[in-house]
Length: 356
Ligand code: DAH
Image 1 (tube, rainbow, N blue to C red):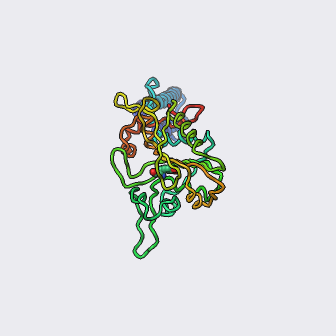
Image 2 (image 1 turned 45 degrees about the vertical axis):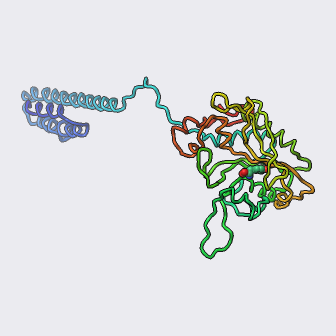
Image 3 (image 1 turned 30 degrees about the horizontal axis):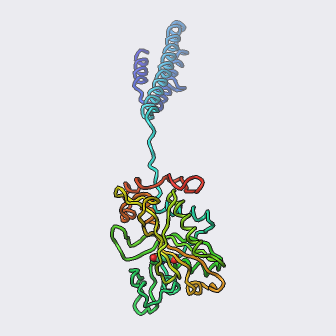
């Protein structure tokens, strides 16, 4: 009996897990276990023998059962300890910041421009970036021989050999959207068209792709005076301070008369400040839409007239936010984007503020 006891008490102490423990329980005190079989032998014993062996076997059974229970509890404790160790968490550590993306200054300024013009009743219109010659030039009164075509450093698409149709162009300005909108909605019209434009040009202030916003307002009695008010209103809202504008007589094929518009600025301290000083900075082209352009868009110039303007978005973004090099706009350098980018959830509005 002593051998039996030692065998099981040692095996239980050494059991590695619960299944091993269960196997030992069956072997020792299960129905056909060693201790149970010994108990069955009690019947064959003399009463004297039985009086000694009976309590001893019962005691052995109890001892093995409590060793099993104790080991089972110990295994469960160890398992819990191991789990606690792997799931340890220092709740006093500071939280990990998730990097948030930023809004590109061009997108930000497009949203700001849109908010300001929306407040004056202008809707947003869009057109394709790959245009036909006709929308980009002819319809805007820029015929084939016109020097403006050459000046624009146009990108042409490639046609397969033997395909004699004129090539498409990457639009050199947002002005073709004027024509598309006239065709689509007819007059009256009050729209702005922000978007990408393309010219083969590259230096500190020119990139082959850049952004413009076109404006177009057509009605029965829209005049240059309306144009001046709208632009002054726009620049003052955009720069957050009253901005004087200067209209200089100019020439564009699609407007008559035409004016280039400068905004008031100062260069004091080597940096440009809009809305103060007595220097001028050219920011856009504008004028009264040429009758031929209205006709190309299917609008009767005897009934309707209006103004148009075109302005560089990247340019006014650089001015407002003090960004020196245009090329960096399109380098996708994360450090630049984090520095000049805007908070993604701050939608520019006139009442809530255009930017933070
Ligand atoms: N399309 C011109 C350009 O890209 C800008 C422009 C000038 C647009 C006068 C206009 C306008 O609508 O009236 O240089």
